[in-house]
Amino acid sequence: MLTDISRMRVFLKLGVTDMRKSINTLGPLVEGTMNLPPMAENLYVFCNRRKDIIKILYWDRNGFCLWQKRLEEDVFRWPTTQQEVLEIDRTELEWLLRGLDLMKAHKKLNFSSVI
Image (cartoon, rainbow, N blue to C red):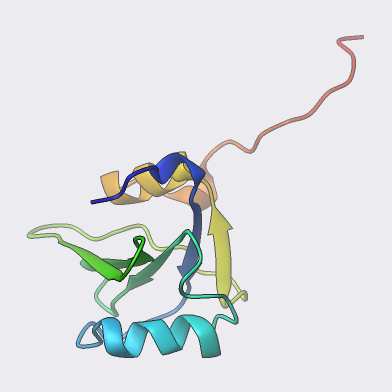
């Protein structure tokens, strides 16, 4: 069980991932293809070709955990960009899991003055 998900960074492996992959093959994919440390306190998110399955790999204290969600109807709004890896925040992950399109969400604006 995740003890403190609020501190974890979230990385999407964009494109298609074969959902037959398990912990033993997703861990090396994170390290090799995504060029990220698989045992860091991060969530690594993968999606299949049909966009109806998402897997999340993470390291929890002394071992890997693998979480999966399969939709019975509809598809996930998986981002499509030229990037191989996309970092999103925890709120955006929740949106993704609920079926919202991250690429159409309002972007955060930073202003230093109201005038």
